Image 1 (tube, helix red, strand yellow):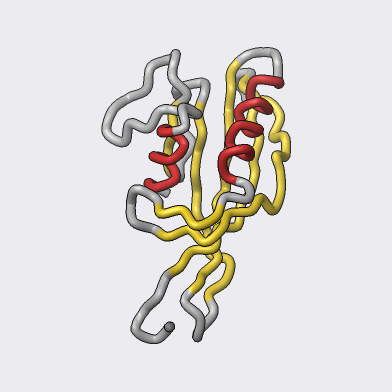
Image 2: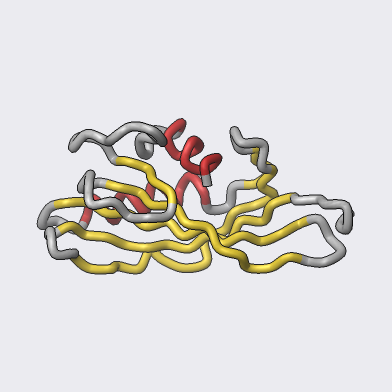
Length: 139
């Protein structure tokens, strides 16, 4: 997740500050828990999909939730589109954390999650990330 957070920030899609608070003008990138602030946020969460016991590739699900404040839902849709354009179909990447991504493909989304109690729009997309992950028991 840290590798993808840094990848999105390097593409100027959001701001990755793992140890500092975000300003209201930033689109924060966070891992796991969705914070109350800022209003504009990208939340990344990983979940297991499949691990072949003999091959060294694993598929990891990457949920990308986007949130944007205001009455107009289009900015949150534009944010999800920017992430799709960067991630979908990407191949043979080595993230800054050393993870080798074989490919990344969107499986679903973006699905609108509507507005929260603070009138912020959100949506969710799911990507399947094939990663090369050899281990002593897998070639």
